[in-house]
Length: 153
Image (tube, rainbow, N blue to C red):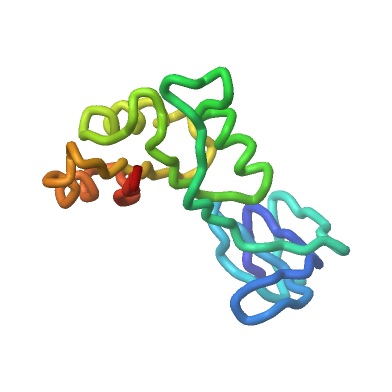
């Protein structure tokens, strides 16, 4: 009996940890289920990727989406939308917003703003400053924290 997928990407050049080669990709439930020759499998949708390269998603660990405070430049929604269009699947957003993301309340506010608005996975850097130096061990473990970004100035 042939395996059934929700989606099969056929005939693309897959670039992965083990090199590159012509392979098919089977997707079930929004996740890659198999990579290889899926010529005998069926799917609800098939996309011909001949002549195209298929790469793993990229993690961008330093983005500046400027929310809160400078949304006229970019915000969490527009920045993450642009990121996924470029193949980025996760971002770590920097703390130099207005106000700075240097405490628990500011981090919680960013997580709240991002939830159900961002188009990719996310975490937020917490700014390490002279004022919160004693708290960074706790701050870096808060939900939504990517870690501590130290401001040297």
